[in-house]
Length: 128
Image (cartoon, rainbow, N blue to C red; front, side, top):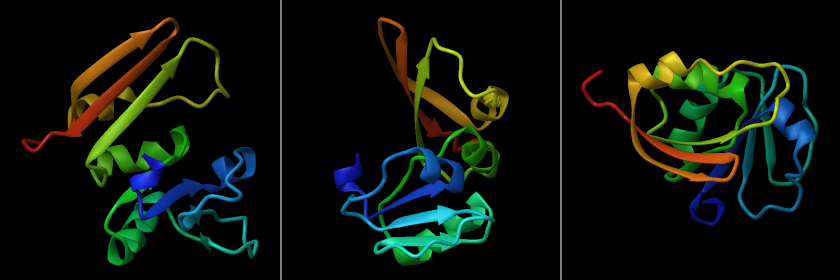
């Protein structure tokens, strides 16, 4: 998926905890606290919804790799065309994903279960 994207969007917490150095696509980060200067990385003091709007004005294919907090504002705003969700059986960081918003605004198109992992594809529900 990364190789097909023109840009990758993430939040500040994901940027701080994941190894995003050395990717070939531009990286846009929504963060109210981070403002580092690194080649290929843009920090924006804005919401995830606003970051998507910025990216849509400049890029065609956008990949969002944000965590739960990042997605919790994007799902009800319906600014994502497809959601690829991975579910794991281990406890996370305590942040809760509002699945009600996902089910209300998106349709489950496919699901694949491998051992303790579930890979789901959700498409935007055009009737909502």
